Image (tube, rainbow, N blue to C red; front, side, top):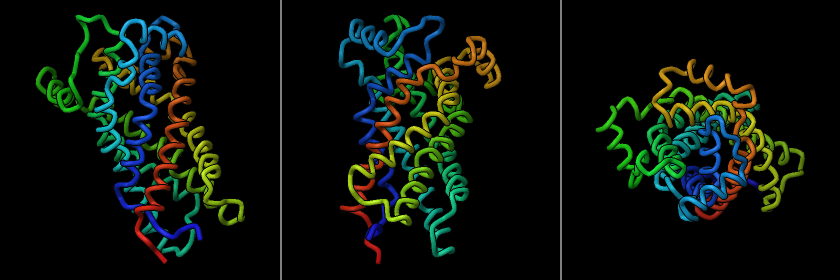
Length: 284
């Protein structure tokens, strides 16, 4: 009744692209707040600043890089997660225990996070241009232009700056989203509390988004700082420099991060379920 079709390997990436297009302005605000040093702008203050200096259209700076990131990062992490879950579920002939979902979620997220690092760097830099003086802006035209210029003007290795943090964050993100979503959904199905209604999917994905936000925020702050600046020569230095601002610095931008990640998680799984229902692979 609940499993008349299964997702194709690329559905996770497509669903994530759709969600990212809607929530990109919130992602931009999160990046701007995380890269602030010393000044304490709130969400409202940063929003007014962006509009005043650059106009409404600047909220979509870096959209091409965001789409490119989802087509690498999310497509890989969801496809690996679904592939491993299918293999393990087939061997057990029943639902997987939660700890196994956590393991395969971490594996998929780690691989996806590494693959998506170059696009993530370009995305962060394009978004951060909004608050930079004109003479300091990088002005990448699009994601591919940004990657080519990074290789030419800096070095190829720079494309993977902060890759370890991005991979670790990807692992936590996939655990918080996919693993928690699946577990909550399966608990609902086995206890006859789950229905395929839109409201149920939104409720379950809201919980998954909340878990992912709290799990990922410290790593997200560190990743953003390392990718945006060449001043950090090691993760340890980035951690200690951020720690000097106080423990709450690791949760800087938590509110806009939650405002972005929770709706993005909801939209991702709503789109994913619709893709599965309408274009998925039929099963008995």
